[in-house]
Length: 241
Image (cartoon, rainbow, N blue to C red; front, top):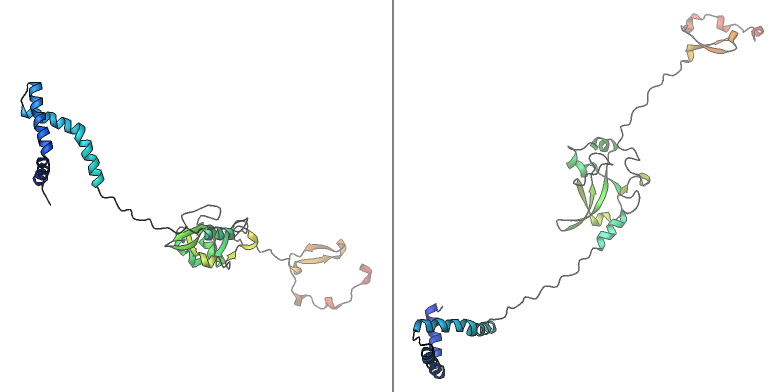
């Protein structure tokens, strides 16, 4: 690669070879010295530099631009239009009242057990319930995101998501909650209290008071059957009715 000195020498050779320019330049130098009364070479060169900046530099700039090679623009690759139809199709499956909640296996939400207040209910029902969140792309795959509401079905926890493949979801073979209801409406997250045992009425704890018109009164002391003797075998006196 040529250094700066070589480049200057090349220009000097071209200028020197132009005899018409050299002669005109010489005459100009003499004229300037005579008319100004200042035969200073240094100031003459300063003046020529000033003129060169004002007149010659723009011309050199135009030539430089013309010599500069054009950049070859790489053609932009045509991008195929993004098809988001699948998103709309997936959303349609869960649009409408009571269509957002579905059942999934408990192991699908096992990652959230430690922070969960509802896994006890999942275990009791042998199934978990999750709420549809929307379509997602995970690792380049089309998925459907579902929210695991670990603090209860009425409290949103959007950071707790599980993903099911879009193609499987579109088969529409998943199980929705019964009657299009929410877990709250179905009381899935309520502890089922056992009914209190009612003390059955002891049939032997009441006797008929014939004098009182058949009113039931408590029999405070049950009489063993073997102690009744043969009196129960006697015919009843019809006169008491």
